Image (cartoon, helix red, strand yellow):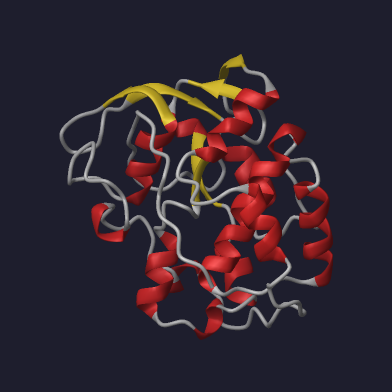
Length: 230
């Protein structure tokens, strides 16, 4: 298992609380090219597509484990950002969700307590732009449920907390697309924006490698196909 370091941070954001269970239809303020949208997935990335291709060949391949006992509460999330690998900026009042919105947004302003934010966010999955943080979810690229079924069931709380708040794991995305993804792996769900395939698969593999998670046979096939677009 390899260790790499955070290499990309952008300007931007903050937020409050978790997204509602059933959000209103997101209101976009524009559309961007698929390539521009895909570039959002470079933020917080810790390696390259070449690294991912090499790493994928080393990951253990086996069926997913049982989901018995799974709960999102087993992965304490939206904890203090600076404690779990995020820069102190914009301030030390931000949790990991706030920090992801700050990193991934454009021209984001906020209060000293990480509220009252304003800015714009580009969704890498659907290639649309939004000017309301309420339209944005913070996606665990490898979902918590998938992580649980591919190795995290055996982790202690500290490692699960690290995972749930890791800058590599978290990406700002359209709330409806994030919810349609659920706990699916790339054999079951891919971003509608096909230009994101390379970086999405790259990020997915780097996460699995960093945390020693395994992949299923169909998942590996899908990842190889997506990485072939790089």
